[in-house]
Image (tube, one colour):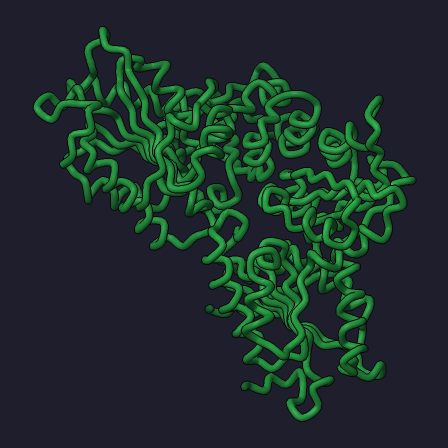
Length: 284
Length: 284
């Protein structure tokens, strides 16, 4: 194992938390984590060269995720967060087995748990990419936790490029969100009246305010980035791996392609400027 | 060489025209070709498994394009159209060399020529994906044909997912187009008043009517699908490879991934329903 200066192998709590995503969306999870656990160091790896994972076969996704996770684990980390819906759905059990006893957390379970407990009437809408909705990971996870819940999945394909373009509010975003969601949340006759909207894609928290305006103030929006950060905190607390609050956490960013683009688009997800020299290019 | 029933090796004019694209956008070129040359048989290959090409390295794009083109040429074809901007920009000279004397046409030159000759004041706006604009292929092609022209490239990232979602007109599309283009076509003070808009992406013809409403009726919109079809007709005529007008052309569709999705989204680009059983899955 390589000691990279961020942690200390003799005191595991000093090691960083690693986050992996196929791209930059997982930076919303890093942002939520930094807010929730400001003392923790973090390493983020975005496999942008092999984007998108969503259209690739399951075996390929598992192979890519294992390789990326191995790279991070070799750097010395105390926990791994698979901050990518596609990789979580396809590869989480394999990653957990492979790197045990390292704690490994995905983004699906935390979001599903939060939505299942937030909804009063058990009527939940999950929005995500076409691949995530078709794969059914969120729907199945909610069904395991709250079997009587009625879950409707809706692919919102345009939300990813909208977020990447930095168009996060205003009439265009709300117009698109209305077209995807309005008929679901204001049904004229049907009995289904969802009270909870689960954001099943790491890009979607950028559109939170526009989405709340469209679905109305009575609908609870569950941001899976924020709920994943909360689960990381619980896991680290339970394992006594939390870092002393006196430290001011630092983050490193690794990408497999085009550092300048990572810095530019990543800034939107991170909510703070990311300079190209904060991002390192690596080969997997 | 394999005789596939569409043509006859002893009379090359009976062979089909082959079209290659990384995905489904090139179907707008096939649609334009079918309109312009209804007697021709066609084979279309969309390498959807390895989408998108735009973010990949030049050598990889050349390797993928050579492989796909080789597959089509082995089937017996009389002409190859690289109906993909990224593949044209990266691989056209290599493909031409490799398969000479087979005529090979890309989508960049026809669009550039048409825009250069359509513009009266030499002020041309090219819209395309981020990768195409950054690569500068259209800007350079226009500069070669009409060196004094002033060409402005504008990446319109959201147009591709909009077209694939089938949202082709109405306030959302026009709102997005206005945000990308309005300030360019209605400048309050600057001297630049473009009179020509070149669609430098095979997806964009789907949005033609919305774009015309946004840029105004005085702006000439050049659709590179239609101009490419015109060039194919000229090339086949010049080489005496045009098929007898009595034949009613048939088309075959090949994809490297997910025939059902190809048929569904492809129908939008083709402007007619495409049944899943018209699409064959192949491995490259």
